[in-house]
Image (cartoon, rainbow, N blue to C red):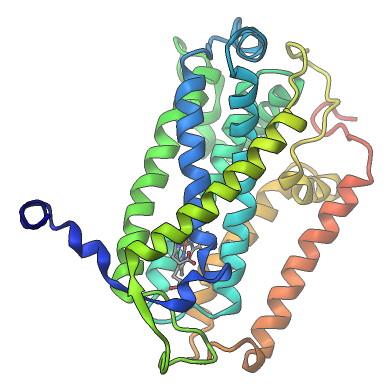
Length: 338
Ligand code: HEM
């Protein structure tokens, strides 16, 4: 052990962690990371069977589900782990907001988190397109239109940007390589900064007086145990509610609804047209980015931050209402002039 430690310095990960880091609220980031691990493991296996050529993509997913041993389970697990990562990242973000953990000195790490959140949305979007059925295709059509709205900035999303490589292949590259690499790089920085600053103290005990400290490896063990519970739940969901796949897309029709996490944006699109998606996402991320620069007071307890609590609740309520509105509205045609 000494010999290994002398060369690799692995004992450094046994740094002391306060006991409150083991509560569920402070384990949400760790569980988001567990979801990411499940996504990478299942994704590597699925990549052996998926063919990103638009002529074969849909059929290769069908073959994965029908003809590959455990293929249906692995696809289901990948799908549900993606949903879990999205929900857990949002819950983690809400915990950071409620406990004021974005405040000094953690502003930089908070912004790294915002970057990872944007990448998670990118991973969700590119993943939806890959199965190349009507839903995936319509997601892409929206994207092509948004690319046009962005003018020169949207060049990467245009089919004519690269004459030799179909857009689906480029989105596949982003999904399996570019986005996961960026998430992992940011995650390393995120974890290093959590180590440097320490997990933020509980707002009701800022000096951590009377709290016990344990080595980080104990915290990892606890995340591992919670991670196994998460894996079991996701496995049950994968088996009981496997994700479907529609037939090869038909061009020129618009009949599906996007995955639920985009519904709030689609209500905005119903109201003000395609630019509503850009405005909605743009304003949300602008608010997330300016937060630590605007709210700089030292107070971290939610009871003594009424303005932050009211504004935060208003943003969440607005998004929930927009989501519900899309849920009760039939699929709308946006791009075909309907
Ligand atoms: C892939 C996504 C993410 C992963 C895997 C992740 C992981 C983690 C982990 C393991 C921690 C340690 C404490 C905890 O678990 O609560 C943490 C802390 C933190 N995260 Fe994240 N995170 C992610 C996304 C985000 C997002 C979206 C934000 C905010 C916009 C964020 C902001 C922070 C901050 C400020 C801390 C320090 C908080 C504290 O010390 O209390 N993270 N993250």
